[in-house]
Image (cartoon, rainbow, N blue to C red):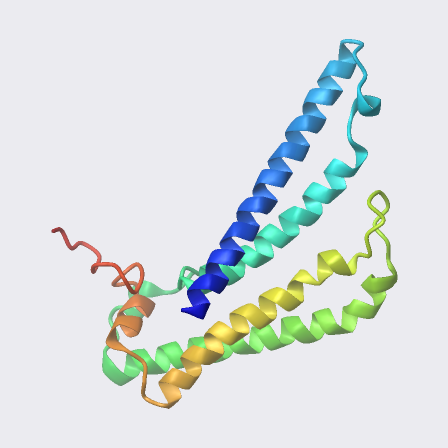
Length: 184
């Protein structure tokens, strides 16, 4: 399934970002500590590591938001939605998804309007155009937007499954899992 491959790739990107961040920050800390004892390597630290780790943290967070959206893991009001049944639950899901879709459009438009400014701004240490930081808004708005739009279309065409509704209500953790409280 293509979506599974996409999400797996995003997860691997997140792991790579995390490994790079930890490696850079740890190495920089060790080099600075060594320079305190008179052993100066690489000028006492790697200057680019702090800025680059911040950029990777932004991407880790924004890509993580897309992955969590694909797993239906974002915050919801499950106590209320769990009490709803039938069309009321579908209406709650539809309303929620429309609101999320509006937020994705606002994020995309805001990022689009800021892109020319950030394309010309240069990060002081790495020299990267700042669009590499702020461009994460494009990935997040499009990624979450596609996920939610697919669900809206399934609701409008009557193809939403009972399992998806139960997952929206927090009754199951994911589409392949058993209901909460179920013991085999």
